[in-house]
Image (cartoon, rainbow, N blue to C red; front, side, top):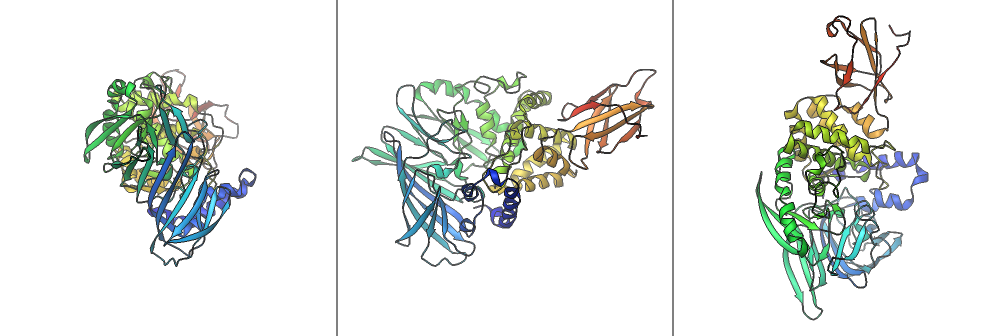
Length: 558
């Protein structure tokens, strides 16, 4: 349950209507059912999920149930339960009574019979089975991955960001509503181990069926796509970190043949935690601990149970995404996916259209980690080096209400936007206070882009709204147009939204200055910046993601 979700329901419905009306050809009714707060979702608020699933590995099938405890917060309708085809809902039971239901694609609508008094707590249990969606290219095209480790043992894992948790279990598959806590009970062959989120409470043996049930408990709110299953021949080792809120348990689950490598590579976790607790505040899940779990795919920010598949090497599968050399000095997956514990898991977007809140901050966190280890200039080099990956193909913010992500520029362009905002604020103590304040103000909550933008603006005491609108909602990169004439510098912003304004730091013949540039031509006398007949040379501060553009000044400009 997240406090912002109910208060913004009407805002979301307006956003859905406005965006979908401009792009109806792109989306379907199923997209709306998946991505919006429908009337069949809005009247109930998830409090607790009690999920029980058995994995039949050889058949690539699952069966189980989810008992949903919810609070009635509005006028009851039929209840929308998301469960993707080809999975089948077998029955829905409330107060011992089987309920009728009907299906529309990947959604079931349950016809409730019992009274649903306002503010009351109710529980419904959903039984299901089938063959879940199989991951094609995890984690980007996710689902369940059925594979084997290097020794031929079964290795089964889940990954479902974007696709949705309903690809393998029935739930309210809507980011704005999270349970306050969750139990995850996974039954598997007794020769294997399951690693899921939170703390392992108990393991129940079933000798007659040669299976075991691993019962995990998450003591904090968790978004659906973060709920993870990792089944394999794992070995476990443990460490401890003395953090801002005391002792944090560090649990590592790896393939036995990688045990020695993991002891060396995973030492980076402590320096990562120290850096991110400095910049972002306390690790958000002390009660649930921190886990890294080896997976057959690259990585995923599963809350308190981070998926790791970077093959125990630095960089991104051995590559430096920035091209500067700094990205080869640390393990990309440990740093990037762990950053999501703050931005993505602690602070979660209410709609995937605002996923920049997750990815821009996580990309920027990589640069902060470089800064923590090697200095501020190295961190700037890294984030600026990542600009080569920006495509400017479409806006960073997607369409609301239809489960639509914006451009992948949310990573590199978003990280550069944040680095630029730091430069505009020009006060590192305040910038750190803003980042830590975000995680404090929105602790364990879901949010909108607007909330994040306004919080930063209010704390910075700078009108950054034009900056957010320019970089999040358009593909245009501002051009600093300038010309020298009659001993003056003429300048303005071009290739921008109307009335764009943003300060810019630059040097003229090595003299630093800040200009409050707008889309209107302005002028600056140059006498004190020039010596003798030295021609003026202008350089923009590299931390601004803008382009310089020397132009011929129109005669109309005086």
